[in-house]
Length: 232
Image 1: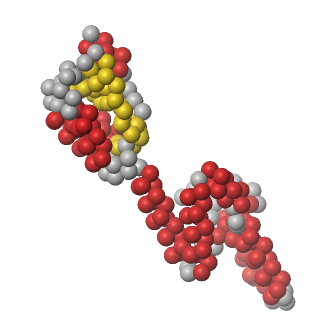
Image 2: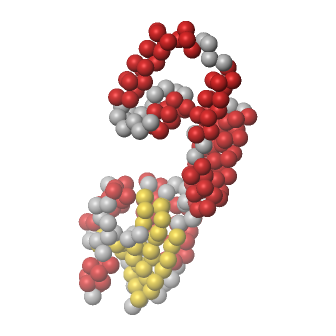
């Protein structure tokens, strides 16, 4: 996979990375060292007092605590810091795997909540209404975006409507379906601008039937300037 894990044990992997490992050869070196210890030095290790081994494990565990990361989270995003602490508590008092899964689920739900609202702005110039979409347009927020766009399209005094995707992030198939419904609502006077036509974030849109259909009708423009020139 290209990573640097030594084993499934986090302490050993962290020690490997902390030692400055930059190549997968470190895994082989670790395996050779462990083999030598097991075959040659293991009898001597049996005389090490358990408190010494416990202290080594405690120091290794404490070094796993990402104090710098935690400080940055507390300063920049307190809610993310709370998720980290919750995950840690579940890992310690319940189970490590359960803690990681619980933290992952909460992080996904939080991400979904942050992407629930699609920011939509409008600007009207010379009987043309420009509707700008910012952020991601996906299955989470496409319903809300559709309602807002329909409200903007309710203005009957405009001779053209332009959906501006200059600042738009990723658009998934549900987002494309949302746009298709909007185009059907104003079939004769609805235009779209797409400045980043070949951008990776718009690959789903540019592969869709909607995009190719609009392209054939000359209703897709790569910039606002090109649309205004054509409208003039």
